[in-house]
Length: 179
Image (cartoon, rainbow, N blue to C red):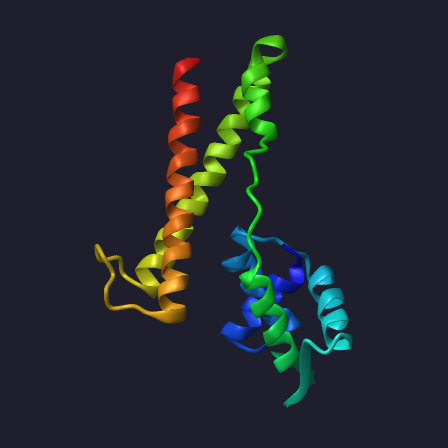
């Protein structure tokens, strides 16, 4: 996936300035696809040149004008085409998994410290996802009340929660086995 596709999804959800997109990446999309402010602005410029987004300049009082990006019909087609492409299988490629497997050949304590740090990160991310779920769509088994975009957002958030719970269970098991 290219950053362009993540930006097209974000802008289809809601037009935004580059700064607003960067903030949204740090709060939600960034858990699945990360990008720096510089990358976002560079790619938005390329997308504008390619005709995928248009820019509206919005005057602000006491501040510089703001550029708000929105997806053009050409960008909608590009996104729809990308969404329709088969997603290639991506085998689990994890530096951490290889380090865990090879810990016996080096400084196991350094590996365990890395696992502890990752575990803290996964707990933090899981708590963030749970707060988003509580705020945006209180979980009810079977969520039959959602459809379209809301259902897609809910299911991606559920997937994030399940992934974090899996990471936490696996890393906890590894740490407990080496106590």
